[in-house]
Length: 362
Image (cartoon, rainbow, N blue to C red; front, side, top):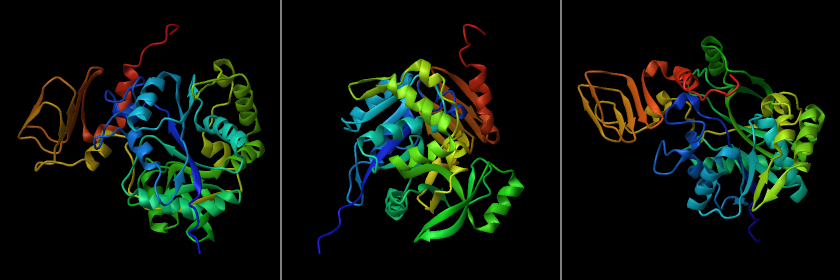
């Protein structure tokens, strides 16, 4: 009996956001996905490598959604990873994930309404991609039947920085109905979720049929879908790039895909998968994941440490020395210098906001 062909899945790479909790390394002009935070490749490059062609799944040419300001960076990444035939959808302004995926699904539904789309943020780390591939295979039948499938990460701690998904009845092997989406909880609530055992972290990774997503948007957020369709009708396509019309796209209601669709649809499903998933959202996370020296320090660039432990120090040019300190984050780039205690890593966005370019009309 001949071996069944692997399913064809089109990767959709979401490359938005500024990564303000990683300032001054991550900036609006060059956000965190375009930096090699862990390893030699950037996180964007690692995402492209993850969805290259391999035996388990046949991935099609990717679709990239990014800011118009990041076109040069995206093209550089695609060239570096030898991906010549990507479609790049260029947003003139940020409108969150529901408009972005509505535009994408409309484009893909015109090409092939039954094609499967795997949506992945460009700034995640996945240590075990083979487990992701298996989760995709598990989810394919549900997605082909019209479900909007998301991937959940079994929690290892009462994390308050992630949203949670409560799993419901089993729809198929390793595929469950979604019982509820939960916003980022406080510590006590997160501890309850962890003890319950039915909750997974919301990774923001989805698998769905293009036509199914369009249908669910039409049911639950028609104003977004209609505005996205109007945007496409006024947009320009050139050399593989879709330049979204600025006036029309600015009128699309801003909303997350979770709020617009996933929390409302009866077609939501979830596949729990322990794939070594990391959302590098702060310098504390970066320190925890990186390889450390004997004193627990993580360094990059011209750095000299004396009697210092458990520090993260990255510098792109200027020499940095720490003497007699512990648990600090020190980041030096052309954009600025950051010094903070690791316990305050979540507050780095305060610094990013303080040095954000002021509007001419402010």
